[in-house]
Image (cartoon, rainbow, N blue to C red):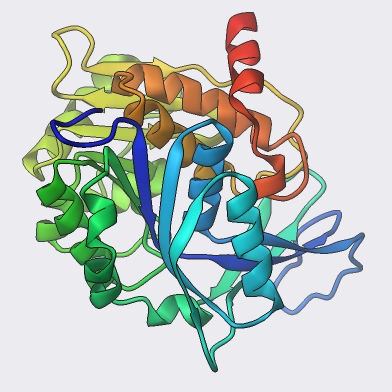
Length: 322
């Protein structure tokens, strides 16, 4: 999306940067159970850093606002973002606080369980958003998740809205958000479970359900002030709900891209970053979601997160074969 006076294609990501401490094992442990692992890595991660890198590797112009510690993990994250062309000048290196971490376990099927510790991410506050106001003056798309304080997310959403950017809100990890924050979102990105939680237990249709079964979901999002949403369905693809689209195009199922998944960690962030990149390039929501679906699928075919994210050529090549 391009706005008068704004530089086209510019994305701002506000939020988290984590070091991913990942161990691979045949299956996820049960409570109280100890298993042997089959490899351990420390990789750059964090939902916001992942989303920024995903968009940057697809050729978008991206800036990230966040915080890391003055430690090796912080340097690793800054280097990974920079390698993807992401502007990190608004990432603060905080003294006396460690960089945030995520402890990730990945099983043989590529599924994962994750526990995060905020670290320096917990220091990010609304004043950091205000200090980076000049970035918002250039923004076409603002991407937000919930790995930092809701007051900071609210401040960023307001700044993005005031600047005329498309505000893309990813309700992950899920928290109950104030109606004022939801109202600032132009596009809500949720998985089926998050959608149900946000809509007070609304039953989300099965992936193979007729499209008309999604009409109440579209209506309930609209009642919350959200005309556009994307509901991801994991390996079953996604559904685009666009109340602003022409009649007959308001509900669209995006078919899954079939790949051999090795590690699904960060696939949702690959989807978010790709969606932001294509919205910033001027694509419709449905076209952007189709592109993002392929990007997320390709991200699962390699271990890790940011290093596994595809470039634009790989995504377009896969799209051409679909």
